[in-house]
Image (cartoon, rainbow, N blue to C red; front, top):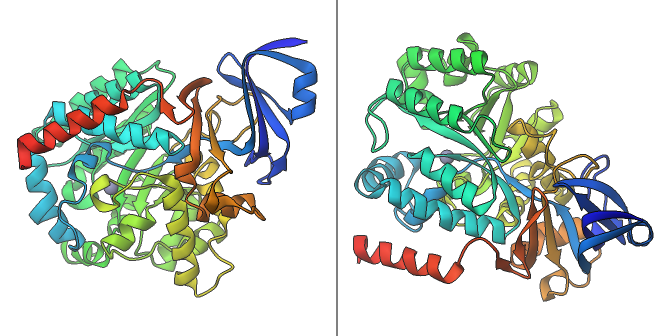
Length: 437
Ligand SMILES: [Zn+2]
């Protein structure tokens, strides 16, 4: 018998790859942070002994979820600026509040709150774009969570950077500091084409090429943004990015609610990645990303919650549900937005969107053991005709009770192992009272 670190016996196992199917009475063996076997429970029990055993035969086990776009610390602005359009929300509420309240300490607190919520609802990897990325990296490191930190590049002064030059300088230093980290990857985060000059965007393209870095950018979030581009530069922002050579598999374009068929062809030909944020797009009435058309063109689409102020939760199961319902409504066709496709977008396609598909996104031998386990002994999941539908439409975020990142159990029986929940909630309450009460 081989000895492994951990054995998980599951009732249902969704590997996502090589096939996006629901296996019954299958489990996973973990050794040295990696998945070493995905086999029937009986076979695992016969072949392996483990230091830790998780008998989860009343659970669905799937890859840890990947939140491909967000601003973690914005959890502290949850509920501020409700019911406004994107431009009014940014200009009248979010940017002034951020300027006044978001120092490094607040970013650390908001990020910890976000990480706690994400881990507790099954997310094991998140992508972030926010000021004080050093604080975000420290919090992720302390919590043992995997992430892509895209440092924010914006032409005007913020609490973190004077201008785009300063942001690049500080962000590249952070990239150097985490160059060899196994969980934290630092990438470029130009906020948007409308908050940067063409020269700045060209420098982003140069660094992306030279250092082989991912680039995440808000793009074509609503019609007003695209109309502004036509007024200012006589073409769309996406056309500008194409002209300066930014369209590539390294580019992660977030939102993309406004796209011509010619632009969809550019995206497909360049293998540019898309992040769909259905809740944020619906809440700010920004528009609808044509996910069905993009996927038909073979384009990789991941899912993201966006920040806590425009969602307001970071529960990726809720995001999948909204994505599914929006796809059905947008296409006036219930065959779109299948639960199975939502699971893939929130796992393997999300990993591919941020360039991590060789490490995570599926339960396959050799991959890092990032795993989410969801209870099925809940009212909303019984009876279970379809495990995918139970996850996407059954409020499964509330049923997550074990989560593993890189083989380490960071949520056990619903309790976060590295974050003191009561202390975090008390600190959050104190911060809010000191600033707003
Ligand atoms: Zn965003």
